[in-house]
Image (cartoon, rainbow over all chains, first blue to last red; front, side, top):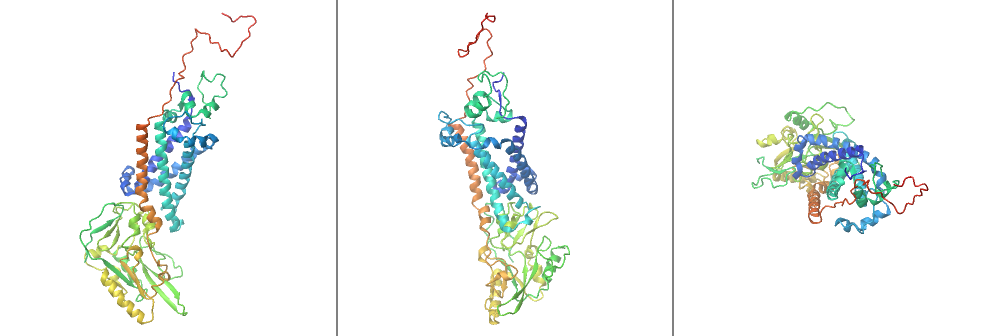
Amino acid sequence: MSNKTILRYTANQRTNHWLVAILFFMAGLSGLALFHPSMFWLTHLFGGGPWTRILHPFMGVLMFVLFLGLVLRFWRANFFIDNDWKWMRRIDRVLVNDEESVPPVGKYNAGQKLLFWTLLLCMLGLLFTGLVIWRAYFSAYFGITVIRWAMLLHALAGFVLILSIIIHIYAGLWIKGSVDAMLHGWVSRAWAKKHHALWYREITRDEPHPDVPERPITKKG
Amino acid sequence: MASQDIIARSATTTVPPSVRNQQEVAKLIDTTKCIGCKACQVACSEWNELRDEVGHNHGTYDNPQDLSAETWTLMRFTEHETDAGNLEWLIRKDGCMHCAEPGCLAACPSPGAIIKHANGIVDFDQDHCIGCGYCITGCPFNIPRISQKDHKAYKCTLCSDRVEVGLEPACVKTCPTGAIVFGSKEDMKEHAAERIVDLKSRGFDNAGLYDPEGVGGTHVMYVLHHADTPKIYAGLPDAPTISPLVGLWKGISKPLGLLAMGAAVLAGFFHYVRIGPNRTEEDDHPAPPDTSVHVVDPAVHTFDPRGEDRP
């Protein structure tokens, strides 16, 4: 019997996450192709330059719509609490796997929450600036100065987004159990206690004997 | 005549062939000689086999209303009232200025879609164009247009195909008043200087040459009666430069951005190597319940008066 008895992500949440992830890679790689000449070879992944130009905005819009699904699912769990600020001040301890003096956090730690809001901001920025510079349909409605600003901010938002996702992916690989949580949904009690103690406390509050699991916990926290 | 060696190429970070020293060419448009006959527009359309759609009259002589993928040059008419109360009819042949530092070329993301020849001609290669419209964003003169038919960018080529074989551009050949002349850039500047002396002697004190420094000079130049106020010639920019926004967007920020992304990946890798993964010690493996031992919780006192459950 597996010791992973807590359902951290439902099948729908996992599906939504990975759809966004796939679209992030498609929109991201096609965006990088136009980001700098050294990346132009990436257009070959999408059928050449014109196809990259045609597909990129559609992939971006689809990514945004699916990302909204994640926002609706997770926004409530991403409000900052007092412990998050304390957690941030202990980030140096977190980074060296020394969690003795790190305060307990809820379903998400401060880094994850920061990522959530950064991604939302980047996605909104990419959407609006992206529409302005979508030459085939929308650019005609905007003046040249607006378009130039949009170009610059689109590249900036894309840069911040990619950088954030690099950190996101690494954090998943570093904290063992996280990728499994998003792939299969389940985490162990020890994992939940170690990384998200307040969340663990919350989902096990109603249990008569929290240390003797009888059936899997699928309650959403 | 200068050859067509390519000395600058869009989205290319290495130095293009630049050993041979070739003569720069220029087209000089003398607005003071122009009569607005539009023969240049017709010649352009003829030579380049462009047939724009017949549009509508919008109450001005401008026809068509704007440059398009099928209209690479356009006479723009301005009725200008001088301080003395005289009406001046300013006519400017609009089209690509063939900048020495082209904003379109700086902005283009597709390698080789925009090239600059050694003789100064800036040319679009539609075969490499991906239709993103970045050239429009980069251009300080609002010249390139994306075709709705093929989603490629088009503009005046300075008849690079004619110049290559020693002919002058079609508009130059056809101009009935000699308002458009073509030759080496040096010769054209000299010719312009003579024209300016003549204009000044006839009362146009501000006559001058339009060869804006902000874009490194251009290979299409104007003689203007009012060179102090280019704006009055249907919005000819007073001091065109590549916008600082475009400079930032296409400048050092991109390689720095890529560097930061690479650094983030490396930082992650070495964090893993030096600090290592964060594993959870699974100390609470749920042991299979041992039915042979009766677990007694000292905190729980049960009262069983009849002792029926006792073993």
